[in-house]
Length: 172
Image: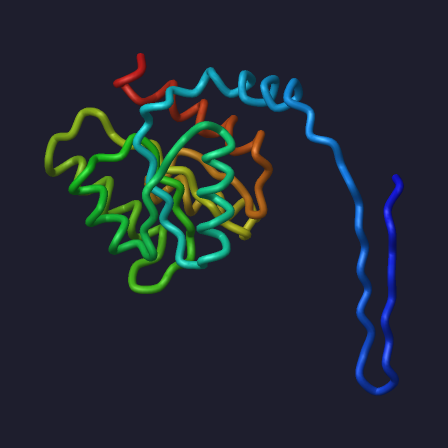
């Protein structure tokens, strides 16, 4: 690949490994990637409810790669408050957060929608590293619509968002 690998090592201190690779940027490939996501409406209002700053960045950047933007809540209570103000189309909800976890936040959102007689309910997607059948059922029973495991792939996120778009009345 025309690269270079170097090693610096000092006894009782440690080792440092470095590598250098050069890649060409191809404009045509980028255009193809961007066109493959045109099926998602660009005006979706999306909320990411995630307490971990790194996971927040991953979700935001992945959504950007899909041509989408989002707001971020640091916990379930903040997500509930933000939903009441903006009525998001889609919420990506972490299961385990401080203050109010994703399960309880989803239940409170569904109760709010029922009490306010909101016909166009949001599509809630569980984001979790918990992958058991019981965890998935717990998410669904709390009012979540779908489930995606962390770490997730961009294509998997696109697929569950696409499913959500089909259920949001605004886009029927």
